Image (cartoon, rainbow, N blue to C red; front, side):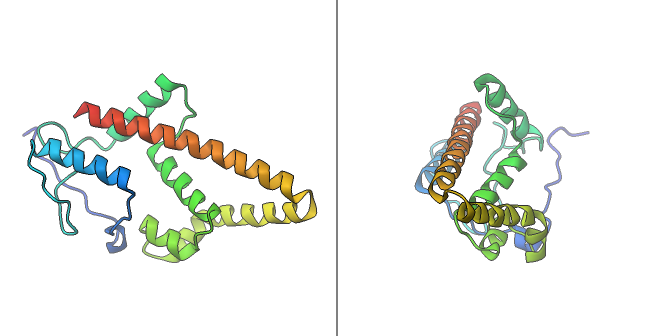
Length: 174
């Protein structure tokens, strides 16, 4: 069997193919990756662009398990809490809810074709948020809010650290 033969996977639904909003730092990293892939010639990343961004040096696709394998290496070497790439997706969605995003905004961000999928998966988050709000109203509101902010701040810092380390590690591999 030809080692270079592969079958690209399609997205689950049309909603899975979407335009993502990215911050300038991420865009810079992606442009750097594209420049390195094209050996100095910057090729724009366009809406209908089917070229792969993360590939092996020869341009063939990486294994599906590769991102989790690399993330696990980073976690072990930096003694970080264990999480998967999919776990980072859930963390992202939870943080969106915590920041006040609507269920519709989170659905679109995650690429769920039906809002019911998002609601079924993240019902626990919205229930937890409601419960925390009731506790805040019953007890010392300021102390609980400070605790929540500190907890989420630590989680965000850990996830940002993991994503930065992971991104740098992946980019250094290419």
